[in-house]
Image 1 (tube, rainbow, N blue to C red):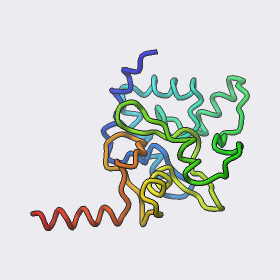
Image 2 (image 1 turned 180 degrees about the vertical axis):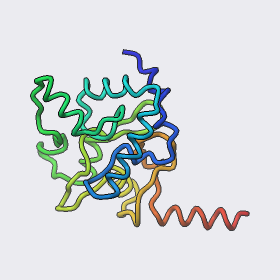
Image 3 (image 1 turned 120 degrees about the vertical axis):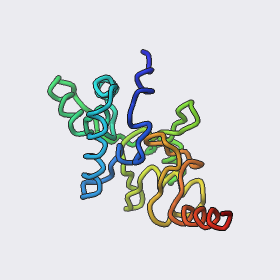
Length: 181
């Protein structure tokens, strides 16, 4: 099936890529979802995006203007029996569960120089909730992030470690830019 419709997505050019993968149910998550849906409803690829997400049972994020719950409702109305909405592919096996094993099980190269998250979010590890960006940061930098971890590329949902920075790294970049000017 052709994926040319992906190139038409307005989400690819949006300045708030994390909005398509809101975390939790708080005010920020609701604002992120509302932002994503507002952009989706103007998008020429909206219908195809929604249909594709429903067909592949996309477990997380806003796709084609539909949230995770809205897509599950459509599938239930179609009579599709759903498994656990957040299967944990990193559990089981002989290896202990760590942020590294979670990253290895859920991060996937997209083939265009970016990285995407497979499965639901946030991830609970040792009684703490983590976003995919936080896990990518911790695994790649060997330390927990300070402040929000934000993408530096324009690809919605990209979690490639080279494409993210925490607050400390953003401040350091700003200082270096100020010194250079």
